[in-house]
Length: 223
Ligand SMILES: Cc1cc2nc3c(=O)[nH]c(=O)nc-3n(C[C@H](O)[C@H](O)[C@H](O)COP(=O)(O)O)c2cc1C
Image 1 (cartoon, rainbow, N blue to C red):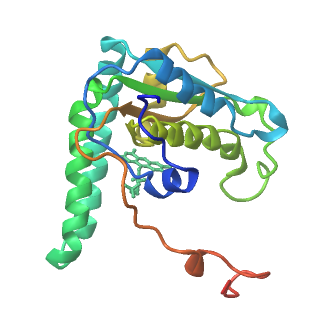
Image 2: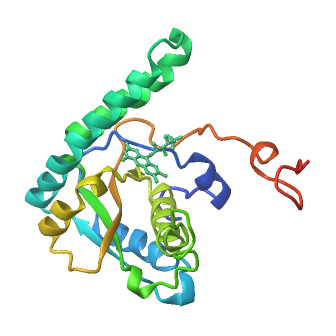
């Protein structure tokens, strides 16, 4: 009999992958990190070019540098967000206040996360089929975010909490200098991971297929 905790099935992992923003500082063993990174490497990418890299930040100074960049951007973001929510009745406001408080905690404690995964992407290595359209391009992200999601699903399997964050992109130049990211590379996600303070991953609130899926033509009810 193995002593390893039972791992959730794939559907369990997908349906409990919520943002876990309160992380313990306890270190993550390298073999666990290696499995999380391997999961990222299994993700599909356009033309199988794997145009992404991930930096695993574990050094206290590097993590502090990332926290110093992230925290003020979170403060600005959450300030604006909560202003938008002003006037909501208390029962509708309460969940947002909980998210804001958890986000404040993450911003205040980011440097204590045992590992911060910084996903980088190189657009020159991608065939971005919507690059010339008169709208914001999204296809390039398809060669990076599946890797991020795979890593996060692996975190669920390993009992690790995590949250996909992107606010650092607002100050990407500083992040690149801090981490020595070369010209031509962008940053796509900053994912703090660690063993959770509380229950960790759990129930999520998402719209169902009846709201998001259509049959044959846009807007035609799926079911
Ligand atoms: C593209 C993207 C960017 C995000 N950026 C941040 C971020 O900068 N900071 C943060 O605390 N959460 C961030 N999140 C987490 C979302 O806020 C979270 O997944 C969403 O509110 C749903 O919450 P839940 O996963 O706990 O159900 C981001 C998620 C995505 C997919």
